[in-house]
Each structure stands twice: as C-alpha cells, then as structure tokens.
Length: 239
Image 1 (cartoon, rainbow, N blue to C red):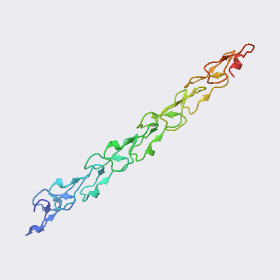
Image 2 (image 1 turned 180 degrees about the vertical axis):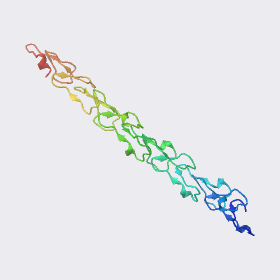
Image 3 (image 1 turned 90 degrees about the vertical axis):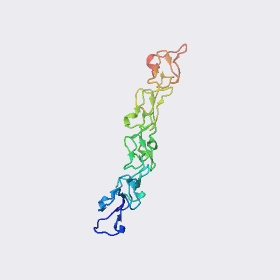
Image 4 (image 1 turned 120 degrees about the vertical axis):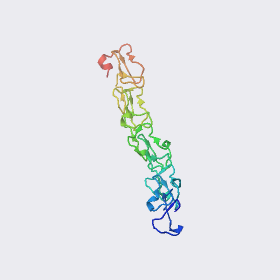
C-alpha cells in the first residue's frame, strides 16, 4: 500500500484493499499493515484530508486559538482564546493568562499587548482577568500614580497636609489655606480654629497667634496686632 494507507487483510489482490488513513492522521510509510500506522496529528493542529502522507498535512491552529486534542479533523477544533488570555503562536495547545495588574476584554487575542494595564488609582492581583472591573479601587485617603499595579500595597497613604476624598485616585489633594491635616491617610482637612491661621497650602498644622495679636480669618498670612487702647492675652488669642 502507498503512503497514507494501510491494509490489515492478508491475501488482498487489488489496491482498493488499501484503506485511507482517516482525517486527523497521516502515514509516511509504505506497506503499512495496521491502522495504527496512521499517526495522530499533534495537539495544536488539525487535518481535514483523508489519506495524508506526511506530517505537513497537519495544519497549525492560528494565533489567538488553541487545541489541546490530538487527531483533530477540522479547523473548528481550534478554540478561540477567551477574554483575559492571548496566544501569540501558531499551533498553540493553550492560551496564556494576562498578568496580574492587567485585563483583556477581547476574545482571540494574539499578543500580550492586548492585555491592558489597570489605570492609576487601581490594582489587580489576579491573572487572566477578563474585565476592567477586576481592577480594584484604592480607597479614600490613599492614591496610586502607577498603571498596572499588582498589589493593594501600591495604594499609598496620603501624607500629612494632604487628603483624598475619592476612590481610585492617582494623587492626593493639598489642604487649602485656612486648613491643615496632621495625620496621614486622611480624607478631609481640618479648618484652623479662631486665633490660628495658615496661609499656605498643604500644611500639617495651623499657627497660633501670640498675645496682643489675633487672626480675623484663618487663611491670612499673619496675625494682626491689637489697635491702640485694646489688648488680647495669649489665651484669648488662641481661641
């Protein structure tokens, strides 16, 4: 029998007794006597033809697809990579997960570039994420300026003198003049009380007026001295 065929029956008198190897297989040997001589196409490939005579008859699945079965008989055996994965190679037997800190909402992706970074202010510790919703928000009082962050520890506390009252922030806001914040990881600023002032932004404390001086407004640059004929002691100045 020619290549691509076999015959397990003794005493055959005609070539018609030679049987084609089935689809999904090939045989590159002459005179095969058993169906076992037909070799399966490997994983990642398929063959839609009968009687194939060489391994080259097994066609590779396209990039963006995979096939983890041997002896596949149709291109439909090549399965599209799901969202959250990609395959850059032809003849793939599996798809690769997008890494942590990323996601991919498209099916059949052929490159790692299809995996998008989680935006600044977020993080994602899971691999193979299929939606942007997998990217978790940094909480209030925190920020993260980097894209593609993997761990929650990438969300950094706002420092003293600053705050953040929103989730998924890429930066913190400075406390405005007239306010301060002595603690980190804060989501608000504390207004200067009467008798104290702060004309600068991003400060951790307000300045107390000395005896004989007062602050009419907390955002003033300096304390105002009492006019002639009036006085204010240290305790009153601090109120």
